[in-house]
Image (cartoon, rainbow, N blue to C red):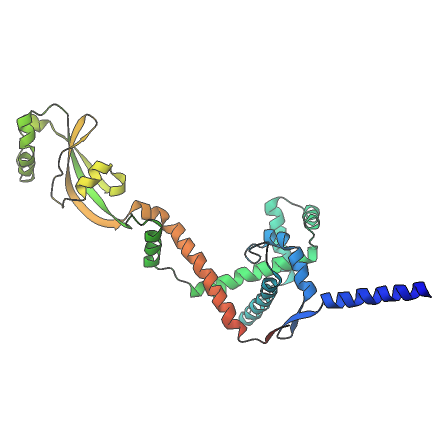
Length: 302
């Protein structure tokens, strides 16, 4: 009798303990969230993070954050249902099969992976459904509310490259060059006047006539040597640069065309900057959407 009584006490103790653990901690409309629901997700966060990092962004969520994830899942599903999106089981199964093929896994290997991470297949199935829903939610609900302007990209570039401009010059040039030592000192002093005469159609005389010429078209200033860039920034279309010695040659550049364009450095970073701004905006807009949407639902925490 004593043994039976002791067993009864132990059973009641376990029952009461289970009831305490499984208490309802939140209600969203007609759906309840229990403490055990939250604890189960907390225990399998690492696996969920691997499967769906978009939803489970970190492996160190506290119970309140997990509870909010469950509430958000409900809000997303309600919104998608209103838009006519219902993710059926066969669509989830198709996604899982696609993942298996991409990773080179069969179903047995997948089940072993899930088992080693403490996750049941049914849970993996539902996480996959949530991921599909979340991606549709982002593309159909959140994305239309986000726009990234050219000025925002330029502002971000300025923040990351305070000493650089988004703008640079593009040139069409004629490069006049001659070996060092060919020109005599008096001819060197005559060079600026001779080049001005060249603009008027006069020919170069003496050793000055030994200058060779090469056209350099459609080149951005970022593609020019530092000493050339410094000279060309100061002069206008139709002008000659000062003499620039590069290696064993003397160069003088004639500017045929000069215009402001996006700098090479800016163009190289533009797409990544756009993506960075978009990702940050997506996070902010999504958070605001959940805040506004939650006002349309009955949500109570216990």
